[in-house]
Amino acid sequence: MPTITIQQFEQVSLIVCCSFLMLFMLFVLYRLSKDSNAGKYGMFVIFFALSLGIFGFAMKSIIHLYLI
Image (cartoon, rainbow, N blue to C red; front, side, top):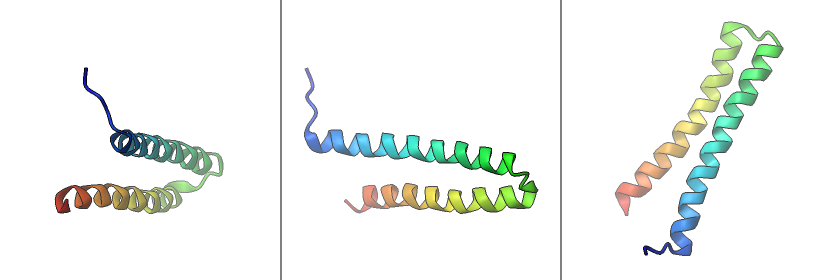
């Protein structure tokens, strides 16, 4: 039976929980922009700013994977 170390568990948990949090933030921002009638430009600005953060998180993981 394969065992998992605490470090592996923490790494997987971090990725899963942060991914869930990012998806939840997308949902909240969508509802916020929809309920406030932000318009197409406002919705674009909101999601562009959030996607930069998600892109940074993904790039951090990819760069860390290739450097180690």
